[in-house]
Amino acid sequence: MLDLTLIIPTKKEVESLPIFLKEIENFNCKKIIVLQKEDLETKTAIEKIKNIKVVEQAKNGYGNALIEGINSVETKYCCIINADGSMNPKYLSEMRKLCENKDLIFGSRYQKPGGGSDDDDLVTMIGNYFFTFMGNLLFSLKISDILYTYILGKTLSFKNLKLENFDFRICVEIPIKAKLQNMDYSCLPSYERERIGGKKKVNAIKDGLLILSEIVKYFLRVKK
Ligand SMILES: Nc1nc2c(ncn2[C@@H]2O[C@H](COP(=O)(O)OP(=O)(O)OP(=O)(O)O)[C@@H](O)[C@H]2O)c(=O)[nH]1
Ligand SMILES: [Mg+2]
Image (cartoon, rainbow, N blue to C red):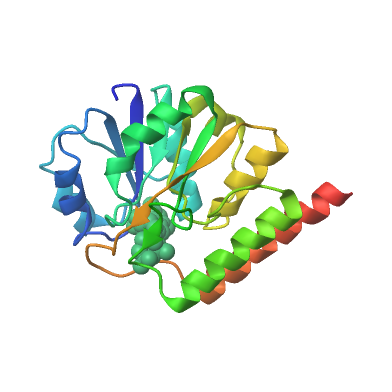
């Protein structure tokens, strides 16, 4: 997997990131941690870890972390994978193989056999199903999990999406733009683990409403 770079968006993940990086220590790929300048605790916690690149974001936000991460990739493939350990890296080699004749491969918690989640609560599960349903209804995305954002793809395809959202709206911007650009993508069942430690950064209500506004925005734009 020498042609693969992991993009690891990280915000205050002292409890999780060092353990996750230990887990992927022997994965033969490049690893970019994208974090905020002021996140001194996380920076200190990983300063002795070898074979990683730390990118300090010019602009804050989860979306900016992905955009700046993608822009610093130099390999043919890259994959967005969280710092909290919830995305199991055992799927990477299969995602990488499947991507040879695709643009993007989406990890899916809701595709069987194999998909599932130990991290979902009732609210996030209903939200995930609702947004996935909306995406399929309004854009015929034909994907089974719109918000997981465990996505491996060709770096060029990611760059061609010309992503713009600085926050969690980027999670739906990626599949919707991929569809609008007629990209070739598919899903692979993926079992989500609980986060290793620390707190979640997503606010179900606030970020849920932002994501809904993004879906509506694209729908109105396409209908024009
Ligand atoms: N660089 C950067 N990373 C972020 C930001 N917000 C969240 N992240 C990271 O993005 C990933 C996803 O955030 P999470 O808090 O795990 O969101 P979540 O998976 O919905 O929440 P849990 O289910 O509790 O894990 C984690 O690796 C975070 O550290 C941000 O503003 N900047
Ligand atoms: Mg998480």
